[in-house]
Picture 1 (tube, rainbow, N blue to C red):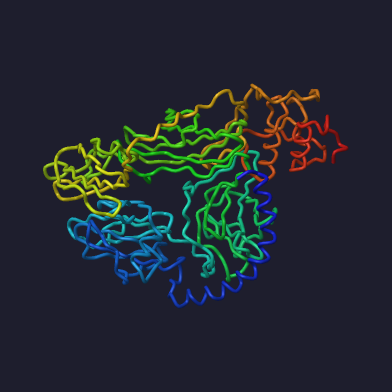
Picture 2 (cartoon, rainbow, N blue to C red):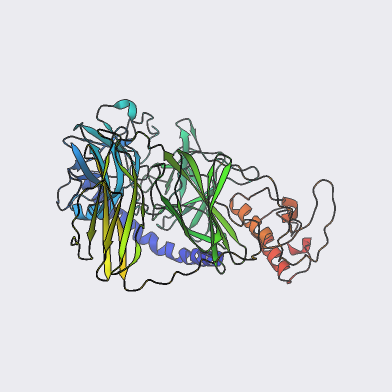
Length: 607
């Protein structure tokens, strides 16, 4: 989203908030009654149901869930003790209680946090996106999670040492759930130990799209370490639907509320300073005012994975003109560039060794605006894994030509049990779901098939170990008479390089301290001569100290004003171009007027 678009959106939100305020009040009454009827837990945000089947090919066609999760307030998690799940068990965790088919379409918990000694994985099983548990000895399994976004764990029931032991904060808090909260669907930050770069403001934001009359922020690290007694501190509306709170220190947890027990969010982990929470969608995002807006940055497989497993990084953004993408992977001090700046917005990565990696997504548009996002990704060693897992399949879908043999090649790991052998099966289905080949298990890691007619086909690759543990993955192929010519990837040419206009607040990484010494090549030279003073060089308008006055300086000031960390410290004396003793949006506006020639110098008369 462009900066101007965001301002328009905020202006419209002022009107919408008045309408939403009335509708939300009525909605809260109806929702409160519905929640009471549903028998919500005294603590915890919702009632979750388990829908499961003892099968590696589930149907999910019943109307009665296996049971409901219990919330343990002492341990701060939801749990369900599952018995009779010997062998394969596929399940879904959802807030839906009357339809397995609908529950599968709207799962509440999709991420796997830890399977312990059991094989627990999210994936597509028999056409359903669900969780798969392998329980060869028929143990009673405790399935639990601390929140819908934290991911599910599986341990042997009664194995207390494997469960979280830190209780939730004991300070009394209201139990009413925000009426409009939904399960977030976008990628969310996971870092939980935020820090703030020196010289920046420690802001947290709430996008009040739910239309609350006011917004409070209640924050804490422990019972004795909080920003204020419940309901917290009133936030400040900074325009449209966005509210802001300057934190006096770093806090790990937060609850947004209306200043009473009537409406609030659940207990949430704060991703860090510079993030905004949408109280209607339940999403956390970077509060980004950059002209280059990041739409998404993701991986096709969730962390963790095993070494050798192919992972695809993808991204999308909107900027001024063509957007170029760069993908890198950092391990310690070493950085590997997977794909330099080009129009290619996805790239494969096959990690060769176990470790914790940082995936770096860099964005740049035709005007030189930049942005960045990072994601932590864990790779584990598959050396002694009993359950089989698929590393790579080539080709992994896409266009294939009819009447020409297509060869699939599979690389898999795991299966370190029994004979240590892996067996492979290839099942081809047409668009109607009918099997069109004769599938059987073989030791061959490749399979050839000729698609005789045009259409969409699904190839299910199954890998089975000697103890019958099985993993499956589907790949979609489009059989055509003639292949579509491949469009050339455009690499970035001689595009001016600007200082970053928006870097994602990466809480655990300190901001760079070294400033660039080379000015942006296409920015016109300023007409105002710099003046010398004691200490740092004084050049009014040069907020980023690159000895040039450009749009970057206005961006630095905008980020400083709203509390987003700048890549390096801002020069406050240079930034105060109207000499009013403050650095705010008015200074950024005068710099923009200077750049386009509306004014030719900065003076106290501007204030």
